Image (cartoon, rainbow, N blue to C red; front, side, top):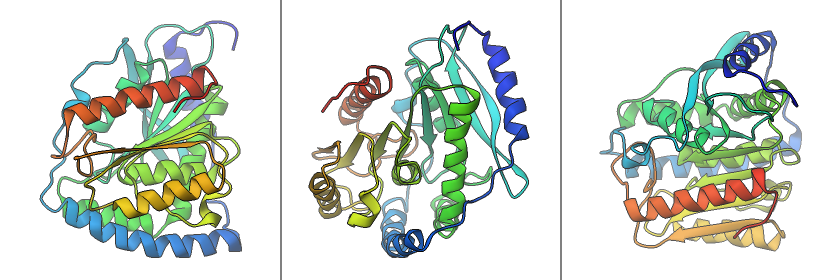
Length: 308
């Protein structure tokens, strides 16, 4: 896009084009089904650990969302996908004003609480760094206010992985086709961290980068071999939901496969230490992880460089 477009024109065009779409989950291959079966067994164990970790947690805002976006942004709900003839609504944010060129995109994936105000605020913070940020909704418009409800929503998603993958695939199409994003990354926390990787698995040849905040990760070669993008993994040393042993296995498998991946393990912090919601926030580690994330996104979505 060589000519500038007012931001309200971009939003209107996005909405109209999105409504014209008619997506549906793609059929799974036998290989996909075999990987899913192995992953699902591990996911069930991870879900139990996560439920235990969050047993007394609530989706209160953390300091991660206190800082305003670095530049003014505009944001609104948009319909970015269709599944079973039903519109899927997310939250789109981008820098305010006109841009002579299309901006890189970020698929923002929520925690197990769903797309709440805290996720929307973090989406705006990402947009304020010069990106078009789309918070996808893997819960069909539902959110949770307590761990029991969050666990139920997470379990339903876990039992329908093809629908979730179709969701993030359409989100990518929305950013590339409708907003002409020249590069796109996935980014998420906790459950969203896992789905940042699932997005990479769904789009191994076209996703430009993935940022994973302490999601439960597969470690088998079949799940990781197709990945063809830089990966930044942010993990916590004291995490009981995502044990360090699995993080090391994930890191080692990526290294054995020759992937461009950097795994950062923060000492002395617990699961969800940088989440937009919850009670485990650790400001020093969270700020370092945020700055590392911004540098990674800058390198791989804007500079096309390499960073560790």
